[in-house]
Length: 576
Image 1 (cartoon, rainbow, N blue to C red):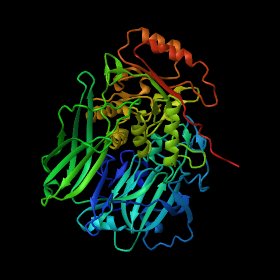
Image 2 (image 1 turned 90 degrees about the horizontal axis):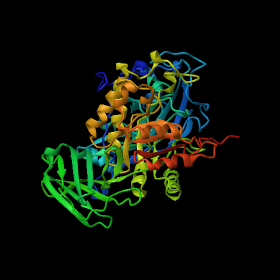
Image 3 (image 1 turned 180 degrees about the horizontal axis):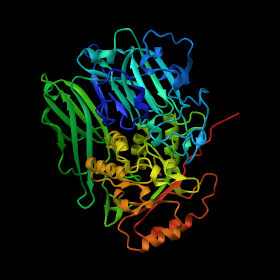
Image 4 (image 1 turned 90 degrees about the vertical axis):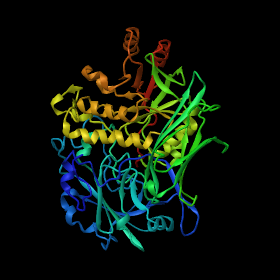
């Protein structure tokens, strides 16, 4: 990221600058829940306020507006002529933009020929607006010295944000949260948020997934208040030693304004609410929590997804709890041992599927019930694992996989297939994005960082993926390094090294797409160093999955660890 911080004016130049992928965005952090006591009512609140529901929107050609002077961003703008749209939702499913589906190529191929990082002239921007009054718990937290952010959980493809006419920030990577501090911009009474959501930006070169190209604010938007003293981030290691039969809990905390609190108390509870372990320490010093060996802990696995709850309380000088955080914890050990992927000391075989978030009416703006239906279907049909192809999913999905017991490969929002593969799978190395191009490194490292910071504490996440079908290059080495700088334990998956074995070091697993069973067996017989996974195989869209037995027969080789069928649900949109 170039040095673009605390900017108070929007610039359209960011749309074609790959080194600018966020402006004024809050650093990525864990998705734990936090609660505080309302100083007015005395009631506990999660300090969240949903901005979902009806918004106003107008879709225009990007060339027809000047962001620096766009009247629709003003607080007093009359938006009565704008269309109504539901958020979460897509512009296409609302009938405001045309549906597009392309596989390898970029959606502008055959129409325009921009060279990266430039974007096509036929580019749409949706001007969103919503009025809101700040809820009492959020407003009271602000008045008590806290802060308030606006959080966009999912959008495509790039957004500029204003509150009450003042520029807030810019964000890309719409499959992880884009969060901005708006504390100083809110006022009593009615407030206005305005968003310019662009169809294409330089980020589009990194988002060439084989799916319907759907745009808009497709996940929830919310306000989130933080009390003055706040646990901003938790990074939890919940280990289970299969030899000793004991567990251990280690957590790193980031506490904002810790000097203004007295103590931090951590409590581990079982499913019945019984306290299993507890510790208390000085708030400024208590940035690391360590339990030592814990007896009687049941390990987490897909077959037995036992969860505990870690509550961390911030206590003031008077002995009152001023904030509490809550995070579900599953104790398990996932490692590569002697070249074999193991969970809790036992070899694992992934009986998986690649899953897009998708509904025939709502597109990727799926509901909690959609997710519950999917995870129950998995459990009923012996699907024990999902690869989040090809982007991080909604946060609720990970909670459900923790609860029901589903193993996850968590995949970075990155696919650049059309930049290096011409029709007929002809390699064009000079056009590769990101490859080894330094100007793309910051954005790609940021994407894997944002995913990991958000999802780190979920026991269901076993493997980190650097993305999909984006060839390889030095940028992936930088991404791989970031993963293991943050997480020394979970392995990295990246299939792209099969196209250039000089980069075998950027994946901990030998992972291939659509390899024949005899090719896999040849690998397994050759004393391989790495375990083997088929990250895509059996292409089941409209097919019968007829030769599955040839793959299940490979399970006799210890380093064959299963795979993920393409794909879980057909991406079909209802049409008349």
